[in-house]
Image (tube, rainbow, N blue to C red):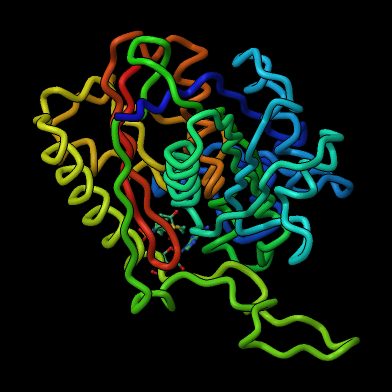
Length: 328
Ligand code: ACO
């Protein structure tokens, strides 16, 4: 049986911070509305000359340093993102180029906010096929480029960031072990959360301005409802599949979309607030990057302790959702 060990974690958030007070000057909103509806106080924004692979490079360097693995030793680079540098090449190929290495299998995974778990599961598959694999699993998003800054219902929620981890085979006790990952999707609900522009269903002509479809659009209440239900159900399923009960969970570390969603999932698991990790107040929703950024902070600050069983549910556009169980 293969054991999947996470060797190191890293995160990067761009220097520029946009607070709720700053947003009050851009759209008709208030710090009070944003804080009470979402828990978000600020978000980071990439500089004009930064692309997803630039953010990914910083987070990945940290994760590789912590893992004691050189970039040239990597066998695979898997990047979760819905905001890659370009349609072609992938952000993973751009990242490889930035590292100055060649030869690795490089690919992007697009599963919106569930992207990191989808990438982690893909990495586990590669480690099963080739046990000597050293897989960089990174998520990087510059959502600010896909924000309609005139739409107060969406632009207050998101931020830019990157998070990374390195996965290899190993023995239990050598480091945080990914015990299981479960994934799901329901494409019939896809229209509830979209970034349609740029896709092949939409034709563009040179010189034409882009419309609102180029940016993130969603039906917030519907997304909210499905997020809570699906994250709860898949979390129950992964615990049952691995012979655990709710009380066995030491830390709940959900996707960071809205503090009210995080709180609702925590309540359904009877997990006290102090064992639910959230950093949404600092970063907003960074989509695929949210989970590795949260994991990195939770590990580096000692929120997660050796021996903890950590449950990680995610939900995003597609709809996609999933859960991971990690024993630290
Ligand atoms: N500032 C002030 N008022 C606002 C703002 C704003 N930024 N945005 C919306 N409003 C107004 C609306 O216009 C509406 O006014 P009305 O009643 O006069 O029409 C009112 O506030 C209430 O809006 P609702 O959408 O009903 O507010 P709700 O309580 O549902 O909260 C939110 C909205 C935060 C978007 C919530 O639904 C949510 O978090 N949804 C899920 C998150 C989401 O969709 N994330 C996308 C990524 S998916 C993921 O990551 C899981």
